[in-house]
Image (cartoon, rainbow, N blue to C red; front, side):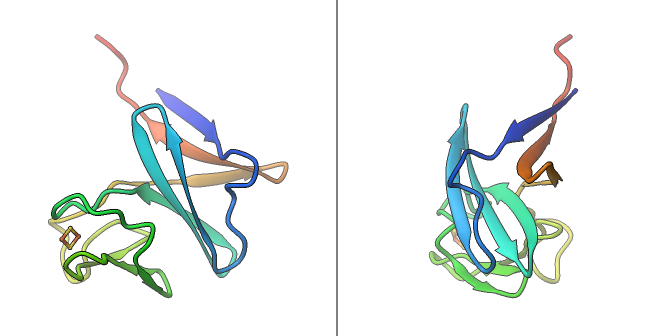
Length: 107
Ligand code: FES
């Protein structure tokens, strides 16, 4: 099942910006890199630190806690395809940004 979660008013980050918002049990971090929006869980897969406040360099976010770096486009730890922060596609429909969640249907 696909769900499109509208990004709340005021939470769509400007160019170079970032925003954090809560949706149900999720804390999502949204980044605007060169006009492209990227959404990830705001929880580092290492020990759960917030990634939203990390150091952003291009599409790479560096966790403030211990310095691991993740590619926002894939969610993967740099130079790894084993460790990953969950990332989400972002769609823009009529100037409204939506986070796209793919969820398994209940049995
Ligand atoms: S919690 Fe992010 S690198 Fe350790």
